[in-house]
Image (cartoon, rainbow, N blue to C red; front, side, top):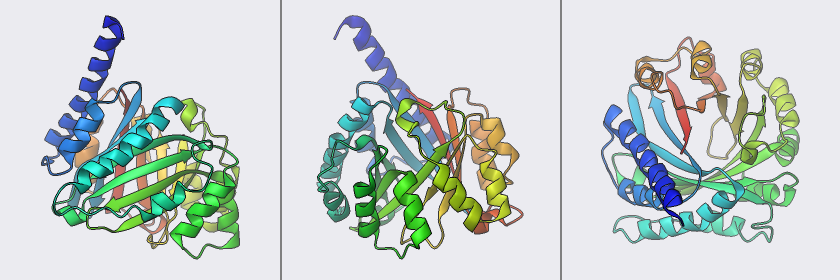
Length: 307
């Protein structure tokens, strides 16, 4: 690696840590375990990645210790996956932390890894107690990955209708795994569509028509109208979710603010990030029933930067 490349790699690593620490300071995030291990992981990555910082608002409670690193190219995304699994190893070495890998181990034994896998992510969700904190790994899959999607549906064990299963088989882009540090684990299945073609090639997956039809047939007019305003739309289906989480993605942060009436805590998050000029994608995550309220009391807000 020449001197210029070394400088650029060091610069990117520092930028990632700067973004994480600015978020920590803004929302009083304590450096709880395993945040130091995650920062080590982030600082040792070379190449181009996306960093996503998010807040989950549950009425009057703010969970802000949520950070995710995303492989921004196929090569970096695939290289991130083995590092993510080693990250789980490092957490398991801590007394009091337990990781159940049965779901992801079963998923990666499908015989199609890594041919149909185009990228991955790894992140953390810090909570006041270790048992409620979690590590998140998402595996991004290519078109025509029905075997992998079928495997994920089977592993989730949910009771999915025929039309939902058909849609998931056509438009699923991401399989998510949540590893709680008390040994619980969950799987979530994410179909997606994009409007505008501005995302990196990793997210231009050529999917979405079936998801649009499914939403219009099974969700309220308000949800159907909102998806027309977004640049990217994603939904998260899982046996553990009482109802799917709907993710509305906007390239322009100002656009994200037009369509949602947040509560006070979410407005605190919004007020901090509306002054940031480096955002490339903002997600608002809510359920359909929450959208029917006059004001969002329970929501997720995600902010993505490339670095």
